[in-house]
Length: 545
Image (cartoon, rainbow, N blue to C red; front, top):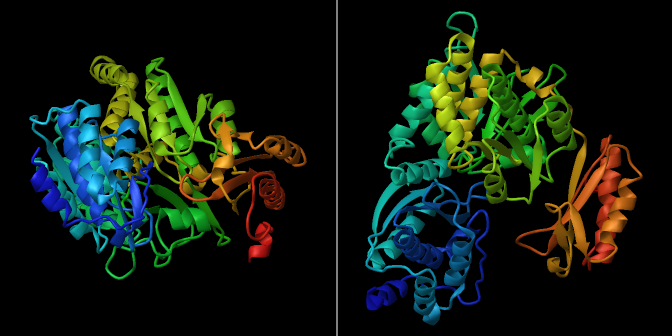
């Protein structure tokens, strides 16, 4: 370790005094102008992680669905998954170290993790389309080279593509070819194989309207389109040519505002979907004949995929265990439909993709989606081997079903939630089952829900258990929530502290919007009273308008 070289280089990437950041599920995110030193230090950390794991590590420069002026960074672990929790802590310590202590912290991490500093290191880097991303990528490269690491800069990528490429590099190409073109080819081939089985008349091509949030997904989908175009025609909106990234468009906007994005021409009953800025989330929607907007979020996506997989498993007579992983934010109707109609077991974890991903690994086939549209399917090694073998051995219809499962394995990006991959899986299933978007939407009816925030002096006074569905402290709050829930039909409510700011998030659902709004309001008053609310007392959602 050339300490002088690192010191010299770090003096070009100085930490603003007093800035404290926390590495979370989304990595680091803040205003782009505050991130230069963070990027440099994450370059250093990626080299240490690469040396310690003797693997390629990924660094993605993105702030996903955040506004264009923000940016962020996340590290990708060897199998394309999120950074290990102990290294998240190292990332936070290294980023927050004052300039004069930075080297000491770097050495401490190196000692704690028994890093062999003579080991070679290799880091791959990707970035989204934000104006700040190219310069910040260069700061990552400065960090990698200061510590003697080798790197490959892939340039513009979706976040899931970087996860995919890291996994390919560390599995000696078993997962796929470690190029963007390899990604396009593998997914498109599986998609076309699947849709060949669809019994739609003649050469009728399906078409889909895609809102790309003015992000990197537009560039990549346009590049990829020619690979799958004989099975699906996509029309891109908000492709970055004139709009602003994530501004009044994208999956997060559509989900939270329950309305279509700006710049999208929607015809009645036409299938539309939205990506977020770095293309790892997807939601679907349509306008019905009365002009009403219908959102199909992550819960309904998980339901479509898991029910299709279950049907294929029944077809081949294979008893692989399948589980759907949700968070407390999943609509109660989706949980009931999966458990009671589809007879698929459902498990709940804490909010945050890393918790869902971890739980999904416990099954032969684990399907997870957050309600916001971020999710994927994980196949255990044993399940994958078995399915590929059955696709060779079985006969007739059973073989066809096993072959479909094999194609789904190749079409899914198991390294991370991936809007492009998920879109192709959904389109293939709808084609194979001959379902319209309205029929998919009619699987079940979402219960009306309301989410509100309550400002508090200190969010840490609230602690939770049971995957954040029950409050432990402050005393009396859970009892108050339970009593309020009893007043309404088909209702439930929970409160949880924000991971980043001093607010408490309240979720309520009930049999009518009016009841959900009332329940959310009453629970937020209880939070304000019992958990140290500050500022104005919460008022009803209807009073916000």
